[in-house]
Length: 490
Image 1 (tube, helix red, strand yellow):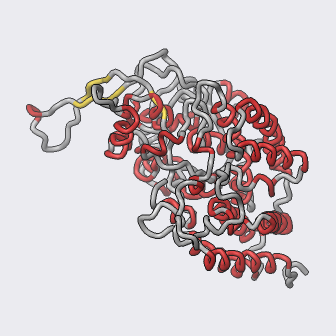
Image 2: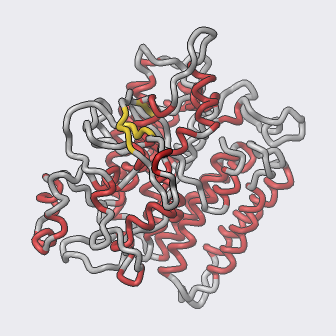
Image 3: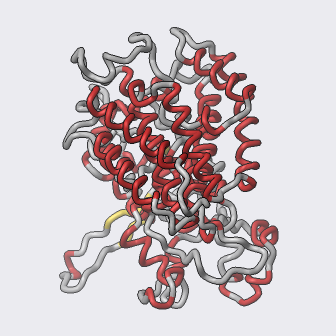
C-alpha cells in the first residue's frame, strides 16, 4: 500500500489505482520529432500494438479532434474538452506509462527473474495490460485489435465501449433520437443513469476480477493495495463531462440527484462487495493459491508489535486473520435481512478459520452474490430524503458501536468515515439550511485527523487508545446531533 494512501483516504482524494494484467506485444516503429530536432539523428521508438482479431476499438485519437472532444475551450462545455481534460489531468491517461517506471521494473524482477532468465518487461505482460490499457470490454481478456496502440492507457473506450460501430453516428443529430437499447446494440456504454454500471466498470480493475487479480504476490512485490471506495474515487476523478447538460427526456442523469454522494457511496459499497465475492469464487479454483492472503486485512500481519498498539489491545483472537475488512466493511449495516447477514457471518467464520474449505467458500460466496444482486437492484428505491440519510448514517454508527469497530479495525473505521462524509455531503444538498450540517462537518474533520497515517509510514502506527477514544466521542456526537430535533425538523 502506498505510504500516502491513508492520507488520501481520509482527505477523500484517493489516488486512482489501476490493477495489473498482460498481453505479448509486437511493436510498431514510430518516430518522435520535436521542434528543433536534427532530423538526421532522429531515432525511431517503438509503440506496442496488440496481435489478435480485428475488433471494434478505434483508439482515443479518434475522439481528439478539436471539433469533437478535443476542444480547448471549457466555456463550450467540458464534454467538448473531454480529451484535453483526460490527457492533462486524469491518471488513467498515464496508466500505460507507469509500466515503464522503476517500481514496475522492480516488481517484475521480484516476481519473475531467475539466475538464468531476466524478468520480462511489464509492458509485455497481459497481467499488467488488461487493466493498464483499453481492452475490448471488461469481460474480453483474450484478444485485442491488431492496430490498437496501447500507449493511450485507459482511454475513452474503456468506459464508453468499443466505438467502431457508433463513432460516426454519435456525432449526428440522429444519435439523440436513438433509444438506449439501440445505442447499446452498437457497443456504446452509457452510464448516465446507471450508477451501478459506473461502479462495476471501475471495480473490474480497482477491486479485481478474473484476469485482473491483484493478489498477494503482486502486492508483496510492490503493487499498491487496492483500497477502492467508489464515491471518493468518483469525486476525485477530473470530470470531463457536464452532469447538468441537457439530456433526452428518457435519460435521467443520476448526478442531478441532490443525494448523489450518498447514492454513489451506497451503490459503490454493494458493487464492491459483489465484485469481491465474484473474485473470491475465482480464487477458490483448484489451480489458484489458497488461501489467498490479499483477502485478509494487511494489518493482521503487518502491525506494530508494541503492547500498547491498537492491534495488540484488540479483544479478538490475536492469531486470527481478519477477513474482508475493507471491501465488506459496510455490508452488515446495509442489509437488514437477517438471512443475508447470517450468510455473511457464516462466510466470514469460514474464511477466518485456520484452513478455509474451497468448496464451502465458493458456494457461500455464490449465495451471497445473489443477495448483493437484489440489493443493487433495490438501491434506487431507498429513501434519500434528509430523514432517510439521517437514518442511514445512524444505522452505520450504531452498527459500528455494537462491534466496537474503532478499536477493532482501522480499515472498517476508515470506511465508516468515508460513509459519513458521503452522507454528510448529500445532506448538505438535501437540507442546505440545517444548522446541524456544520456540527457534523466538524466532527468528521476530527475523525479524519485521527485516521491519518504518519508521513512515510504504511500503517496506522499512531492509531491507539487516545485516537480511538476521540473517534468514539465524535461518532457519539454525530449520533446525538442527528437524533436532536431542531427548527428545521419542526
